[in-house]
Length: 147
Image (cartoon, rainbow, N blue to C red; front, top):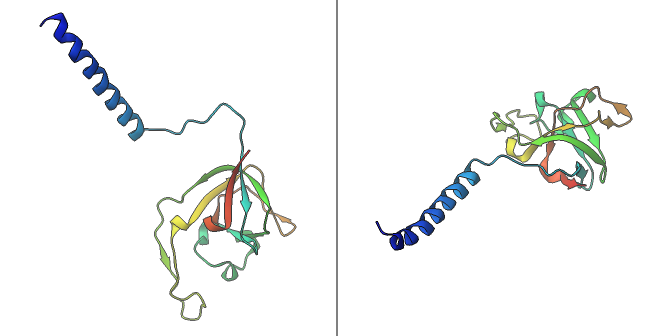
């Protein structure tokens, strides 16, 4: 092999090596956080506010949850500092089968919710709940704000 033919193969090797590394890093990516002290807040955007729900009954509509410890009403434009936010895992869609319920036939999909843990215990209607979560929050009722 002569030196002149090695010049043609070397750029190709680097090109293919770069492609392999780029594709594998995209496939095996892990979220990297910046070194800044940005925080994530949830802001309530629903016109009439929304309910945060507990894990036990995340799929139930708020009027069907009677215990205040199982639901938390929050008004529009309120913001909450978030410790973690992720889509629920390991849950199946649930259909309302109670004929007496006005929600009969509705299907609740876990992907329509976020599982959220807050930095500090949240206050609901003047009553402070004992812990920070996890709470299940309907995605369309909130927006993430980074500061």
